[in-house]
Structure formats: structure tokens, C-alpha cells
Length: 363
Figure 1 (cartoon, rainbow, N blue to C red):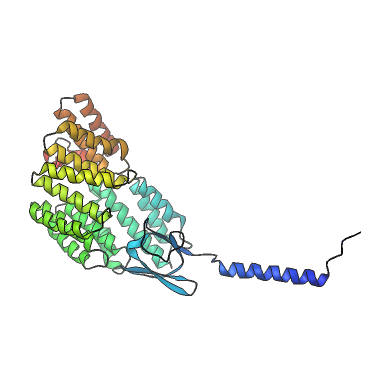
Figure 2 (cartoon, rainbow, N blue to C red):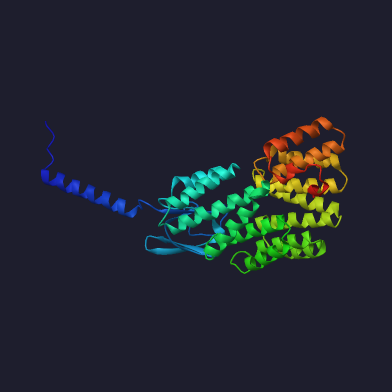
């Protein structure tokens, strides 16, 4: 017995239903969307799968407004890890990849290309321009001949985009470069402007304390940092940076045991894979132990940065320099020469490589 044939009418209805469902599904799923990825451990509850997907409507130092369907969602900037814009040029991602691997000159080229390719997309252009200045700032910390250009680029970005979501990071970067070149008056002015921005008071407080320490007022720096440490959540980035800054001032006050204990707390609390936190902490520990006349223990601290966290192109040359100096102090010339050669080869334009025998560089 042959099965009954389906009527043409039923087939047409079925096809129309299928087509209708397909159209509705396509309409409910954005073909193109901006993706606002949230930071790990975010307190923002309106994200789905760690992100907010929609169309970025506006950006400011305080928040990014994303239109999800017909609903505007306000995402605080301090909860945002990154934004991937719909239709952004591939050169933007390539620049980020180059920057994260320490290829700063190549990153700058890609960011410039991205800004040129993103004409008519102001948020993408701002993103590319900030990251270009940011890459130059990182490069300047290891290659001083880039310092003036990095400062100029950051200043230009701040003036052109005072309402950017990147304005806090731009001012903080500029203050770091100003301190690096002993321009403490300029750094103080930059930090004062930074402190007035949303979500920036804690970062400004750490930088203010570092300026006090650089001016020799370690007691004043410690007092400022103690207030900040008490006010910030345990384990937060802000508290970690405040603790490391306090440890540096404790070393300046010759309170070596207190400094060592504080840094070891930071090391224990930071994730082992967080190379930026760990490299800075181990180098600070090395500085503390070296100042306390414990060269062998200091060697072990700096070796942690060299062997485990060499990805940090700001902290790694600092560790190599100190290892060369300490091995020479310990009478091990071959090891000292080894680290000296690695420093010159890996970071030929770094200030740490230009005058490795200069005691002033040991601070």
C-alpha cells in the first residue's frame, strides 16, 4: 500500500511557515554587533556570557551606552575589559597582538593603519589612536629616544578626546612618563586632573604617593597609601599597586623587613599567571633585599622575573641590569657578563643598557 501523498496546499503552507521562522530568527539575531567584553569577576549584572552585545551609542570616562535591541544598557568603564566594534579593521587586532608581544614599533604601524581605515567610525578611530599612544608610551619606557614622541602623542589624544573612555588611562600614562623623566611638577598637574575624572581617584592616589616618594617624602607617601589600602577591596588591582608603592617607600625609609613582608603578601595574593603583577612584585622584592644587603636573596627575586615573567618588557630589563650588578658584586664575572650581554642584545636602547655601571640606575 502506497503512503498518501502530501497535498500541494499543505506543502505550500509548510514552506511558508519555514520561511517565516527563518526570517524571524534572522531578525532576532543581530547580524553585526559591537561586543563589550567585561572584566573577570565583574560586578556588572546585565552582561550575558561575560559580555554585552549590541550597538555602542556613546562613550564617556564613566560609562559606555550599548543599545541592545531597543534597550540602552549603561556599562561602567571600570567593568570593561575591551570592546570589539562591528566592522573594525583587522589591523586594530593585529596592533594589539604586536603590542602584547612587545613589538611596539610594529604595533604603532598597525594602529595608524587602523585609524586611517576606520574613517567615519569615531569610536574605532579613538580606540586606534589611544592604543598607538599607549604602545609608544610602553616603548618609551625601554627606549628613551621615543619619550618625547610618546608624551606628545598622549597630550594630543587628551586634548582631542577629553570625553573618551580612554582619558583616564591616557592621563595615567602621561604621568608615568613625566615621573620617568623627573618632571614632577608636570606629573603633579596631570595627576590633579586625573583625580577629577570618574573611576580614577584610586589610580590618582597611587601616582600622587609615588611623586611624593620620588621627591623624598616617604612618610607622606606611606600615609597616603595607607588610606588607599584601607579603602580598597582586598585583592584588587588598586590595592596591589598601592601595596607595592608603599613597599618602595618603606625601602626608602630603610624599613626593609616591613617592605619585604608587604611585597611577599602581594606575590602570594596575585595570580601566578599575572605576569605584570608578578614581575613588578618580584623586582620590588629584589630591590628591597638588595637594599637590605642580602645580595644572594635579591638574585633569586630578580631571577623570578627573568625566568618566568620576561614577557614584561618594562620590568625584564630592570631585572637583567640588577642581576648583572649583583653577580659582579658576588664575584661571579661570567654570570655578570652573561646578563650584561643579554641586556644589551635584548634591549639595546633601554636606559638600563646604556650605562650598566651607573649606580644611579640601581634604584
